[in-house]
Image 1 (cartoon, helix red, strand yellow):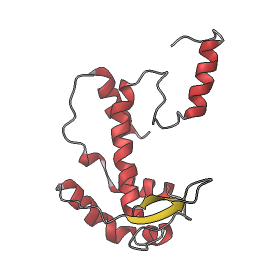
Image 2 (image 1 turned 180 degrees about the horizontal axis):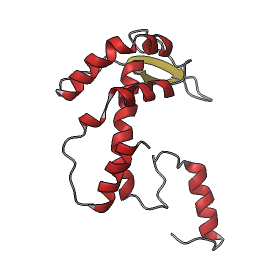
Image 3 (image 1 turned 120 degrees about the vertical axis):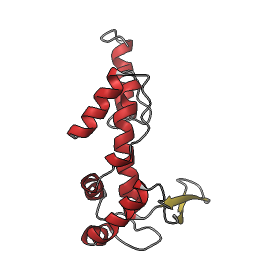
Length: 152
């Protein structure tokens, strides 16, 4: 977590009733670039057909306009590419939406900022949908609680 996010997290921890009213300024070009680099290079492109490598090369061109739109509350996400993938063990298929690479980077940036705030509200033994706390962590903690090594 970067220093700015650490400050947001600390503020949320110290003042649990505080309402954060403006967070868009925390979605910066640096954060967007970092999140873009976390998207795997072999990721499926969205409806625009732009791959992760192409989006990285052209970052300077699209990032400024995207951030400007976000900061003036006028960002409209591009359409999501709908693909149908087979269900395991069944003949039917299920829909899967594939957003554009740039939109995925923006979603990840936004999630980082929101996680810094909401992570403070969770108990240490809460696991659902939290970064770095999957089902295996939940099962390991449950095992420790049952065996009497830990209390939640």
